[in-house]
Amino acid sequence: MDTTNWQDVTDLDLLKACIPDNEDAFAVLYQRYEKRVFQYLMTVVNDAALAEEILVEVMLAIWKGLKTFQGQSKVSTWIFGIAHHKAVDGIRKATSQQRGGTPLDDILESVESGHNPLQDAHRHRTAELTNQAIATLSIDHREILHMAFFEELSYPEIAELLHIPVNTVKTRVYYAKQQLKKSLQHQGVTEEML
Image 1: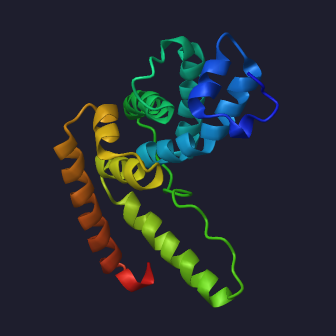
Image 2: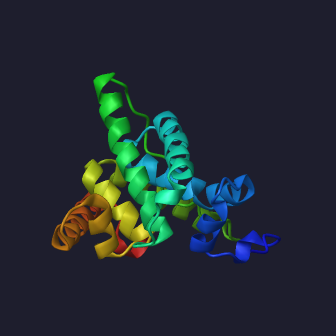
Image 3: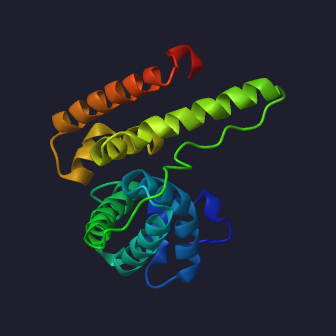
């Protein structure tokens, strides 16, 4: 495989190129998923330091488990499955250590700067309020919303990752959106503002 232009390589071909022990290919895979996995972990654990620790564990598990990928799901689904399991383990450890959390930051992408400072300030404030509203949701609801809307995983993919029925995914998404809407309305954010 020609590895001169990694950007054009699919995730599956990149994963295959990582075997056996191709550190260059894995570095590209790492760069493709580092930010997405970190944002997902922040959604679940709500602690930047813990999310960083778990991210390292996730990437190490991916490196060690490259040969175990069977191709029955998308590479991203496999990676987020590993991230989910490591996040659950991280929460258990943190809870047993009575570790405190930090505010939920950086879940939403920062809004690109436009030419209108007033609109930029409005978008920034709306994003802050949305982050605050997301932080009030349960871990299950934050996780479902992140997978569905930020990672754009399908309901069947989320169901497979979380080992729950598709209807449970649909129900959680519905209730998470309802709670998010209530929380935003309570903060004075209307649908027109979003």
